[in-house]
Every structure is written in structure tokens, then in C-alpha cells.
Image (cartoon, rainbow, N blue to C red):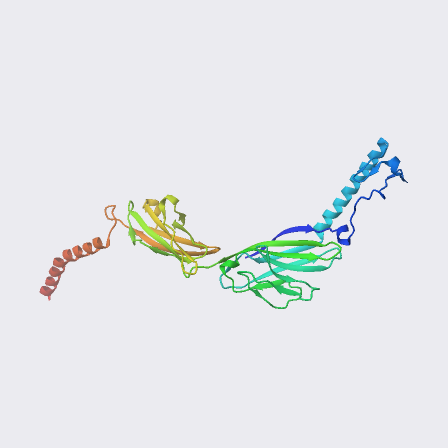
Length: 342
């Protein structure tokens, strides 16, 4: 499954700092214009950090209105520009298996005449790859645990490939795009990856019998092979979920040497008529989920009728012996009559 990242935009506006100029007050050169004239030091009351001037009430209102209008227009311009400088679309799988490879795609579009400065890739906020189109070294890889970049030329590095994934490869990935002047904008998107270690095979059910009678107790167990994350187990009977009160949570099992974790879940319940279908069968299923992968195993049991008790294998053999014993004399008599007739 491919997921698209979430976007964040921020803007760097250096202004006078980038040009090396600073706006500091100078008491010898500070002046204030009132009504279009430069005020003298004595009449204007100009000081560093504070300005005192006599204005009419109408002049104050006009000045305040002009300032508010300028701030509103400026804020609107910055807001629209920040949102429209760069558009980034980040795609990557949200799940992968240990040992596999995945492709990360970061497409961008730059508006307003700005030029691309850099494309940087991060895992958990640690940079592992960068692309500088105008740099002496256009691409550079930074070693990170769980991140193995497959290097290959692809123009603007809109796609990179991660290979030999391990459990440490799980985490949050980010693609960050920055521009040159005049906007000096940066936009990024993030997406999460979960690396799983699937089980070698599906779950196994033990402890079930082939026949059950109403009122009899069922005791069974479902065991899942080691995996990461640990398998989530659940029981169903005829596709109906088994309530938690009829399941048994076993103590955690010891992980394997490579970190995979086994799991098991017990089943304890008394058979009721509703547990059997119209055909007299009861279908008991155990489902194991590891990430998005689903593994199932099911067993069928028949309904038994012998005076409302379960018909065991011993009872069946005993009944067969009784039938043979009853048929013995009858068959002997029939054989004798046949001989006499001939």
C-alpha cells in the first residue's frame, strides 16, 4: 500500500540581516516627519526608543488606519506566497518485509521564479541523503542505522531506493525541498514505514476432537509462529467471534535469537446448540494477523448423538462388536437352510 505524506511549510525571510544592514537608532540622525516636514530636534521631541509628536486627532486616525492597511496587505501577500512557493508530494509504502526493497518518491513543483536549492531525505529527523544541484558534490549519503540507499543516477533525485530492509528501518521518513532567492522557502512531507518479519507459516490448532456433544467442554490452543510484530490471534466459531471470556491469554513467550516473538491463545467453552450449523458441523477457526498479513487455520467437528452424550471411538467399536455378535447366529441359520435346499 502506498501512502502520501503530510505537508508542512515554513519560510525564511532574512530581510536586512541577509544584506548585512541593521536598523539601529542614531540620536544624531533621528528625525521625524510631521505633515510632510522634517521636524527639528527640539520641536519634535525625537529620542532613541521613543518618539513624541503633536498630531491632530484626525491625523492619528489616518496614521493608524494606514498602518493597519499595510499590515493586512503584507500579511495576505506572505500567506499566499508561503503556501504557493513549493508543492511537494511524498509517496512510499507504509509496510514492508525484512530483506525487501522499497522506493520513495518525492515530486515537487516550484512557483514564483525561485530556483531549487536542495532536496534532503530524513529518517526520524536524521538526514541520510541530500541532493544539491549546484553543489560540488551533487549527491551525498550519510550512514544511518537501518537505512541502506541504493545509489543510481535519476536526474533530480525525485526517487530513491532503500534496500535490505531490517527491523530498524521502521520509522518516520521525510522529504524536504528548499529554494533559493527570492523566497528562500522550505517545504516537506512525512510518512511512516513499518517493517515486519512475517511468520514462516500459518498458525496451528491443537487439542480439538472430531466430535462434540451439546454440553461438552472444548479445550484447544492456537499457536502462532514467531514474527515481528507479535501475531494478533483470535478465535471464531462458524465465522462468529468468540468472546474474550472464552479465550485464555497465555504468559508471553521467549523471543527467538533474531528477535521474532511467538504467541498463543487458548479456547475454553461449553458447547451449545447454536455452535452447530444445519449440517451438524462446527467450524472452529484461528486467525493470526501480522501487520497487514492475515493467516488462518480451521478445523471441523461433528455433532454427536448417543443419549445426549458424545459418541466416543470406544463406543463405536463396542457397538460394532455387538452388531457382529447378533448377526452371527442369524447368518449361520441362513447358511444351513441354503445347504439343505441344495
